[in-house]
Length: 180
Image 1: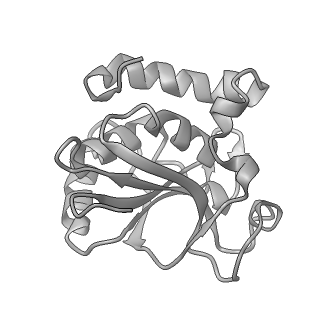
Image 2 (image 1 turned 60 degrees about the vertical axis):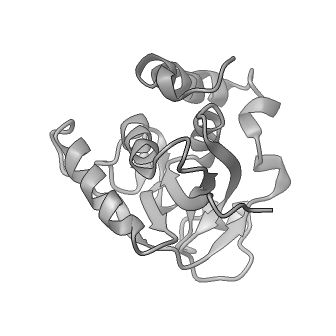
């Protein structure tokens, strides 16, 4: 059951496995669900979303306790662990479904998002192209995509793509991490 102190934000930054694996390590994150947002068909499947024509983006629905970690901190981590200047792709993952996106669940989150974008934009040469808008819809991804990194840590994608993001998270954001 969600407690009154908790808030939600939905984030897309390339493959949802990467975001889920990194944010599982962050203190104050109380729940993570991998899924799809912003598309235009009911109950999309991974195969449909991967075709790139459903309007859906691979996302995580992140529930957090703001008395432990602020939305500002979550977004700062998010904007620096992926490339928010890359349109419809992250590295070799190409297509609209891999877009950088923030879907807010409360109107007051929009001001915080805008402030963080302004703050982190100085870190990048190119402009931030992250989609920022209210959450339209969210569908839970299939079970095999939930907690993927924990289930498959030795899989090549996990080793080559996710592990460096976790290393970067530990290097720059250790104060926000749960104890190992």
